Image 1 (cartoon, rainbow, N blue to C red):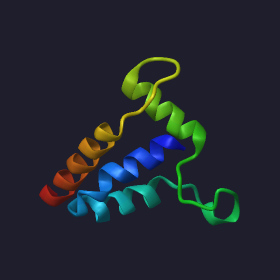
Image 2: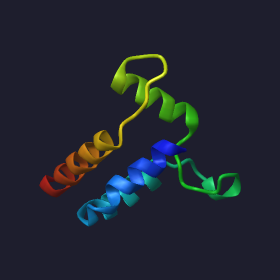
Image 3: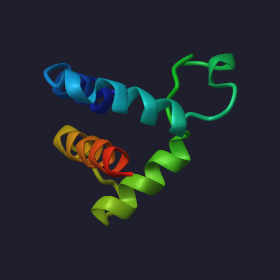
Image 4: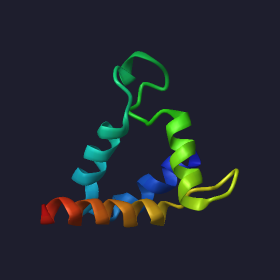
Length: 82
């Protein structure tokens, strides 16, 4: 859970990415996410683990909030160009 808190802190100072972050969060959330704990639109743990492992390449990677910010900036730029 600390990853999500650190990411939220990093995102707090970048209001230009808030809409992109919200869009991505809900896009990655499983259907009916509100029906089970923790009642947040978080990606499935297995999907999140897969994505983190493919990004960092080790068995127990620790994602970095700055990498999420970089990803969100890329998504925003990509969507803006489309």
